[in-house]
Length: 99
Image 1: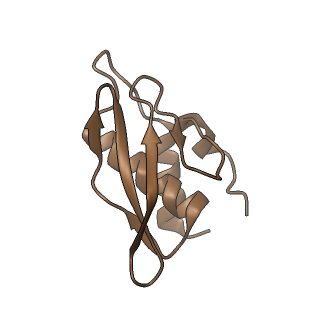
Image 2: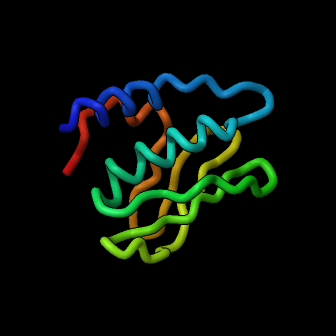
Image 3: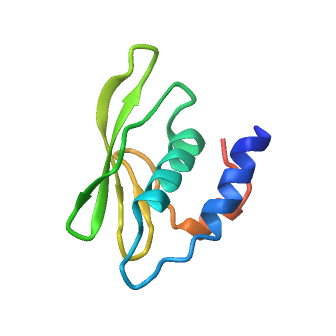
């Protein structure tokens, strides 16, 4: 595993969600870590968009960066979900990366 990704996974696993819910900075970190751990090494997440208490993060994949749905980050728990992929809580990022 890439040392930088491992460091970011550990940082994501330690996120403390306050009364106001997941912050934009936390949503960006969770989206990046989830994308590069679970989705693809090519492409990346766009900027998070606040929707109610949750965050929606458009996903770009492949060399051309084609839009391919969006990650959803639960604003209360930090759980990250994406179509056809497993849902992870921040604490799950402390576990070894599964390929």
